[in-house]
Amino acid sequence: MLNIKKHPLRGSHLPCKIASKAFFIFVLIFLNVIKGNIVLILIVIICLFYLLGIANAAHAVMHVHSSRSAIAWGISLITFPWLAIPLYWVLGRSKFQGYAETLHSAYVEHQNLAHQAYSQILKFKVAPPPQFQPLQKLAQTLTLIPFTSGNAVELLVNGDQTYDAMLEAIASAKNYILLQFYIINDDQTGNVFQKALISKAQQGVRVYLLYDEIGSKQITHTYIKSLRKYGVHVSAFHSTKGRGNRFQINFRNHRKILIVDGEKAFVGGLNIGDEYLGKIPHLSPWRDTHMMVQGPAVQCLQSAFLGDWYWATRSIPGVNWQVKPDFQRNQTVFVFPTGPADKLQACILFFVCAINLATRRLWIASPYFVPDDSILTALKLAAMRGVDVRIILPNRPDHLLVYLCSFTYYAEMQAVGVKLYRYQPGFMHQKVILIDEDMAGVGTVNLDNRSLFLNFEVMVFVTGLEFVLSVEKMMTDDFSVSRMVKVSEYDHKSFWFKLAARVSRLLAPVL
Image (cartoon, rainbow, N blue to C red):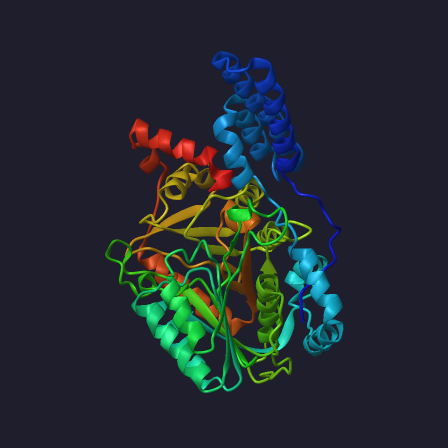
């Protein structure tokens, strides 16, 4: 099944072509008029930049997803256009062009396959507990993927446990392996996975590897060439693919998915690299969370991978759509892929709704805390109505601006009872949410602008006591080695630290 909803065709969001043509026409005219007068040339260039800045500012007002971002871009584009214009062309785009249309063409071409796949998943459609039925209604508006029964889910804590389970699953593959990661490094860990994939390809197993070319900037040509030499199908996601998409480099495919034979799947926060095993000293020990899934949720994750693979390669691998349910454990699972090609802002809508449904407990772990205003408001309201709201953040930064920005939320969060914690032992990278005693989610979504609006992401939500208790225990252990922060910690910082933190918050829409 491909998760496809037809989107109307849209023109490019950036007025690059019109602006470029106008610029060159003006240049030709004025070159004939001024004939070498340097002062006039400079005046003309400056005027053209300001005119182009005004045009882009108008575009920002019309198309940027939030009023705060639109104001920031508009002022910047008019005030110093020579710097802001190229930044806006790269960072200002909020819709990923062409993806939805491409998937619709895949649906038309493979309609019978899509119907067959979807019909298999629908056999296991189930309603979640009554508390989360509003979430189900919202999900039906945002995606074709339903809540499904007949699943078995296992929580995987940290790199050793996750990689061991992944490599064991890869070794057991009989027909095909689908592997997708935001980051794949050509290091010791990357080489272990490379050898495992090559070994299966040599045994006749079809192997498909998809990576984000910006996230995996350290992957080498030699690494990819070796995989292809032995029959592994490898592709970058190609976010800039397609007419008019040259400036789409602000978008990332942040998903981390492994699927083996359509029977077992893995998803969560870990990429492929030595740092996830704690081998990078300044971030060690690395703290992360993944999960293993069996049942119809595997086919739901598979459909997300195939959509991305089709965008990148314009081909669809032959896969297994027959579901192998586990009615003994029979866990209810909802797979929720989101991205900048969604017709609605699906990721943030779902998270706001989930936060609003919490009545007793809302525990969140996120390495980056730069929440949108709507998420911020939902968290405050939850705490004010008596929900135990706790958020674990890393104490060590891997992205300085995001780390600085998080300090600016101390006062307003704690004023309403939200408890913020800093994880002490090393860098915490997990993306986990726990709602009451009834639902837990693990996946790739951070509480920042990039995950909520700009990245292709995926979360897996599970209802049922067994999985919720395992997440509760894991997070309780994390709280025990975390320090609850106080507003005074920020108040006692130097003026320059506070200034850097406030400037970082101004940059929140592009962090």
